[in-house]
Length: 199
Ligand SMILES: C[S@@+](CC[C@H](N)C(=O)[O-])C[C@H]1O[C@@H](n2cnc3c(N)ncnc32)[C@H](O)[C@@H]1O
Image (cartoon, rainbow, N blue to C red; front, side, top):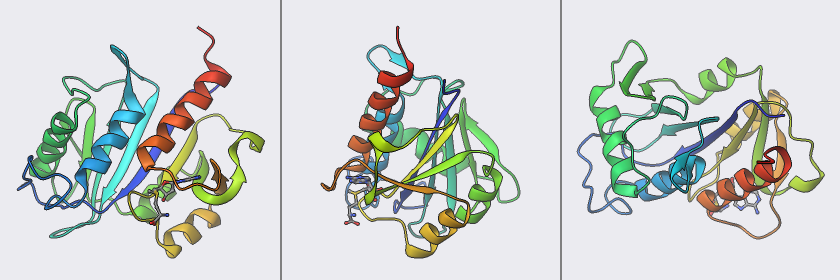
């Protein structure tokens, strides 16, 4: 039985609250990709997956890193469309405090945490790095409280991958084809539902 699913998507989106909501794929640094990944992580038809936690670090200009965490058990008021998700990311960036993590809106937390700190803080969980040439997911035992790591339109850097391997991350693959990150999340959620959710 799986208690909670974690997803991390590295984002190259901008770190200013001056986000043009009409240009998420352009001037916002592919914020559309991140919004779709968040949609794929949480939304069912007329429901939200309360057992999912989604993490991202925005790496774009002008002031990276911005770490944002969405907790399904506490999320309120966010709608599944890209615009609504982007509005809540904008609010998180607007309200960030330099010295400590804050809950910018219900279920959304923001801070200046970097990747190394994030990995250290969650080392009690089992890490799975999504890479096309990893071990086929159907041949991998998915442990309690799995934590999946994905790139957006670019992969994670080599030093980020190395760090994950130092924490015993397992490289796993959905096959040789390169899928969109949001589609990978949908596939993982579906595979885990098939395995663990009977109702
Ligand atoms: C759109 S892909 C990145 C594309 C490409 N690797 C690049 O850098 O141009 C986004 C992310 O989805 C994941 N991914 C895509 N296809 C996958 C597959 N077949 N198996 C495992 N992970 C995959 C990887 O984590 C990848 O970084």
